Image (cartoon, rainbow, N blue to C red):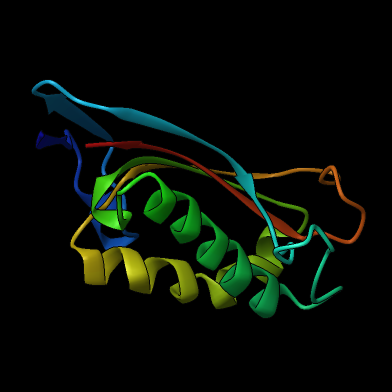
Length: 131
């Protein structure tokens, strides 16, 4: 897989994402359902704790990637949904750090929503990966 960043402006690079990415080559695509702070047996974890929920959502995202034989390196699209964007920003390094360590800046959309599907969940990560 070859990835080419498309950035007609560069301010987004400081925030850890590309404006667009062109992916070329024969590829496998993984569409990842929203990952939240759920335990392996489907119980919501870390009620009211944005940092802990974000850390577990990232861990769950990486678990789906690993199960498909991929890593964060393959992530080309990331949607971040949160019930409190102001509470998320101080902890965003918990997501940006692993992405930076992987050397990727996936196209990203961040949205504040009134609630997520599971009551008490504060953040959800949805992605697309290509290998």
